[in-house]
Length: 387
Image (cartoon, rainbow, N blue to C red):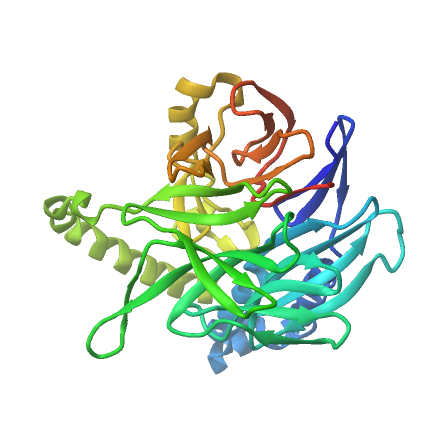
């Protein structure tokens, strides 16, 4: 039976012989605790009639909501051995890579790299080097290699592109696979859109980048290569902009303007009374009420309930929330592509040729023909199997 780890929201879960064990993240927990203390420490200065008279109330409301709504995500995981893993994450403006010992209860995490001016993603380690991506803004990112020995990294790609999802090949220590999409701009240099994501390799010894697979109609993300040299990825279609209903969007303009005005006045009312126009809207930051029907995954808005109902028709009890056109595929030597599983957002393979996949709601094991449920999850977007 495979042993593997996956993220369930901002927790890491280990699966071993049918048993699951949850692990919290020390770095994430410390950040949340510090944020709460900072908010509570200054609360007395910005409450009461005096604060409202001075005009502090609106500014404090804005700051409090910013502290309470935390943007966070585990962006990569790797099982190193029986007890140790790497993970990368970001929290608001901070991104980091940490190592974690799954047996130790105290001082279980070791700092590898963190920065509040760069966006760091990736935790794929080979020997003392970690493949990752580095970006200074939300548009462009480049492949980099971090040396644990030298405690420094070097960028190995450049240009107006977004490099993502680096992983060391399991069949060649000198090869890193990653996906990359070009940044499309207008004549003034403003961002317009990305090109479809293609799969590339970087040869560590030769310093060469090679494009392996590309398509005009699909993006390929999260590439991996097993010990037999076979390459896999998740394939997802490019959104067809021609499908947008222009006439419907024009009809909705008055409704959207009224909605915007409503929320503007409601925000003003909450700043001075602490209550909105309805009980449920009194303080969305404290209530932390999020619409469960809408989630962002890999930069795409997914309507979870809608996708679950559609998947239910095909997958029955194993139905997930990821669209079925997110496909786990294998690249064949003759240039063709074999679809292994549909509705996949994360995957890895074991030594027996099985795939451990996440459809957002369940962790499944499949050989491409037979599928079985291993465990449930709230939202798993990364998986790593112990080889």
